[in-house]
Amino acid sequence: MDFIGKFKKLWNALFIKGSGDGYMRVLTGLRNTVIIAVCGLLIGIVIGTLIAVVRVVPKTNRALRALDKLCTLYVAFFRGTPMVVQLLLGYFVLLPLMGVKLSSLMVCVLIFGLNSGAYVSEIMRSGLLSVDVGQTEAGRALGLSFSQTMTRIVVPQAVKNILPTLGNEFITLIKETSIVSFVGAVDLYSAFNYIGSANYEYMLPYLAMAVIYIIMVLGISGLIKLMERRLRKGDKR
Amino acid sequence: MISVKNIYKNFGTLSVLKGVSLEIEKGEKIVIIGPSGSGKSTFLRCMNLLEEPTYGEVWVDDDLVTPIDPYLHADVIKASNTFGKMAAEAGEAADADAIIKEIKEKDLLNEKHEGSQYKKLMKRLFKENALDVNLARQRIGMVFQQFNLFNNLTVLDNITLAPIKLKNISKAEAEERAFQLLDRIGLRDKAQVFPAMLSGGQKQRIAIVRALAMDPEIMLFDEPTSALDPEMVGEVLDVMKELARTGMTMVVVTHEMGFAKEVGTRLLFMDEGKILEDAPPKEFFDAPKTQRAQEFLSKVL
Image 1 (tube, each protein chain N blue to C red):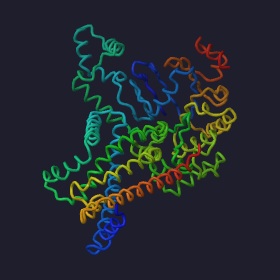
Image 2 (cartoon, helix red, strand yellow):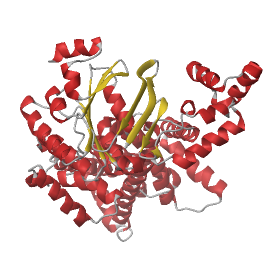
Image 3 (cartoon, rainbow over the protein chains, first blue to last red):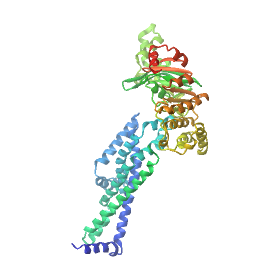
Image 4 (tube, each protein chain N blue to C red):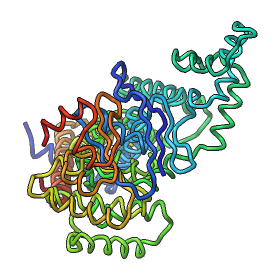
């Protein structure tokens, strides 16, 4: 195999051919991957926390029970279908039906957020249950409302407990972004695919793609470990 | 101050409290003792609605914090369809009091079929008397067996969180007050420390101070020394004794008989969900009236 020839082709495609159009594409792809994963996770945390709270509180009235059912359905749908399907449904079915125009990047952020919400809700639920009920009781006994107790006391502790799992969810999201080209968004995969197709030479571009993914994931894992260690400082047991 | 009227508490089919009533006057130091499983903790937790009684009412001063219990209001029973029917059946000889008594004893009221008169009256009574439970709890401090300090907050934030959120005072004011309270228990230097770094005794003293920061009218203690190492029991009891001297109204569930004798103005002995004795501590310890209490004392003293 002519590795040097292949490498030259990749180099040219990245930096020379078409006046640097190749590496710009990779950077755009990288940026989009990060945007989709980060925004997706943030939306997911908000949605997931709300769903988790609904599922954890005692169901005292009919409205709560209905809401609980709704959340169950939501989680079942987003965990029960592949994300590609959700992406396609969102972009080609839901948007035209609602008559809304959104860029494919926006759609990806939204769908990733909704999808992640379902997974985070399960993670968050176990996190909320891991916080001693005495913490809630102490808050309520002081006269704090349910939501004040949740936001100031229970959720912060739950988040701390589930941080490693949340990190895994983020890594999953980063990797899942490789499907967004299904709706025409530029990401790492589509960038390298474009470079490969420019001169029918896919080996090195795809290898490079894999390396970039691995570097990102390893970096994130390291950051999470660091954050965990920081947070543990508060509670030597 | 707090009045508990005929409360029952069931957990599923298990009945933990069976018709308990209590009037707490300002300044009283009530000590509740009894074997484990007798319902004393549940009873205490019903006073600030951490447990919702299955039947019965809890009043804080003149405010109702539970739903209306129709069986406690003769006029509500009289407005019910059940009463109407029974009175009609009895005809001329109808004796209102006897019918009410029968309805109470046999639990004959059924929310769904008691008619609009009954519903209107229930609604009116509730509207006139009900108080948001969160407001009531601000006046009732509580100390737990397991301390329950907020693990994610420093000692100072533990103490100031509720006053800042609920009493509309500035952070600076709340912290000044918190430091005063910490001085009182000699733990000013722990203000910036997280609870995990404290000993059990320190945690419990701070938990007491956290409750006091809301300036409650009454303090509930749920076995405050049961989770402590023996050598730390004293320091917590000292804080409680000092608190008692300031005239605070207190209800204490405890196994510390010495504390009960020294501080208590009134002693309740509970067993199987009922208050069996209600007497001054000295009287109770010298001559318990019921056989159950005699047995209990012979085991613990």
